[in-house]
Length: 451
View 1 (cartoon, rainbow, N blue to C red):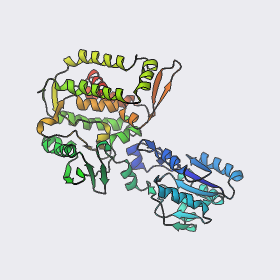
View 2: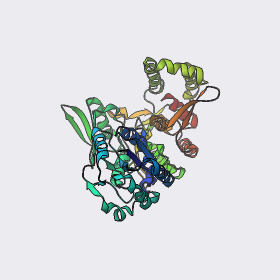
View 3: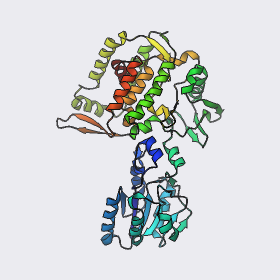
View 4: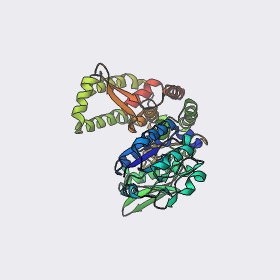
């Protein structure tokens, strides 16, 4: 008996969340560097189906019907609307594999809402009726016209229904950068970060303690410090607000929305204390020193030799050494003209560390660099600006989420295409705002290059 799997991505993301994350269809959502459609195709390949079909619109649906008239008579069909996120674990594999042998039709309990349907197991001859009543991805008629005829299957193998606002909000709310954590625990109220690096956790927890009171408005307050046999950590309020990286990579930041975000960012920069630098060498260590340590680590990496050849032969810049030499020349020419001021600084103000709700203007910074004393809050005044430039101008978050392609042009030079809507207007807003704050374009880009 033939068995096919259909991924139905015709329905729309609910309006309020579509505004927040910028995608029209569930399958376009990026989660841990891959779209939900990509993730589904990867896991569905293990279910023993002869084919996995993707429906993006009713044209795809009609094309499937035409093929099915000749090829799929008598087939069993697993129908998975894209509002359902499938766990890639063993339970899901066993569940979807065994359902090919069922001769009855089922709907899976606990899945399906007004903006997306339930998981279904059907005979092929039931598919035309299903597509007729769900035209345009509208599942509102399903319950009354077909849903009542299907048996209910309680085992749902961990399917998460993103058609429910709370589930989708949970998915796109910040997962925090877990590079330095052994465990990241979440419930409805709290996020708890844990690590065996007790000192790092203590420093992050104490950072808020040393902040000037008027600046705490911008930072998410740690609520409790935890220390046990497994390590240390701290607890934070869980805000169901997407971070700016998620919004940026999905194209949710149109120029108007981004201008509102930058107005909030400008408030932070105008509020934070600034003073002449207490250590004239700090700036060199922060920019040049960190750059050199990262280059040293790159050159020790096993992948470095082929990367070096690509840069030397196909980048048009003469290779990494030539780029680094150019950087140092620019640094020596430009940096002495920049006031050696320092400011209270987050220390890693990239988009993934900024929670932002455009509807209610909530903005909170997470994952600061940490502090043992008040003096640790102070860094070069341009460092947070450089980190933001890294996200806005350098498109760090798009690259970090694999939203780009590298290719060779006709002259065998490497070129990169960002898989994102045009960003020129947002970048102009960013540059204009930062220049008003005293960070001219050359300073932003020099700091960004250092990162």
